[in-house]
Image 1 (cartoon, helix red, strand yellow):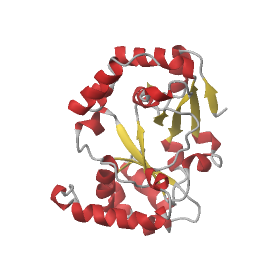
Image 2 (cartoon, rainbow, N blue to C red):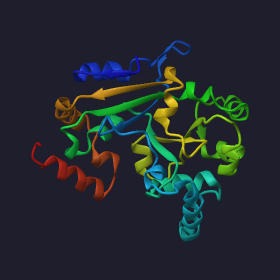
Image 3 (cartoon, rainbow, N blue to C red):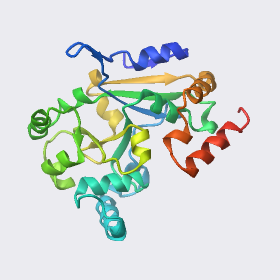
Length: 261
């Protein structure tokens, strides 16, 4: 069953860590990517999709101009994947999607919007190892050679040099999970990584319907959100930690002193 409606904090913990046991190494090492959304009805659309209009055609213009005007903040290597990572991190619409290795960080993002506390939230859990079994042979071989479960920016840069090349690698859409370089404390503290689909028009939740064995959708009832939020704060999972600096501190204090809605 892919959609799970939880009813308590304890049920949520069970659902989040359900398949964490790895018998090969006899350790609890989940292979899930987690993504929290404040509204369970939200589709898994990229910020590029949400731009609307002829967004596929606009993608290359957005990236080209970002690289041109962000030249002073040149990244570690002048590769597509470094630039896309930096662009996504700073709010440019891209086909990347944010995920985290941490179920508690995902829970935070499912609970961060106080205006959505009357609405059920959701945490998506996706087995990235199983998703990568569906990759083209060239990319699967690269992971096997490295002994890795997800790509780094360096690994991707060695295999794919353009978005056109990515799209032409297979007839059917596929999904890649990769880790960004640790360019600031926000990425580190959020235990963040990204996914990208080979086809910019392919929506992840629609793609999931063809691959039911790799994902779960954990629904958080609206009437449970305040309890989860308070317990996360007690566990020190908050804006103050996940967004280091004055902006995160201000967001945390604003929420702490906001009336219960």
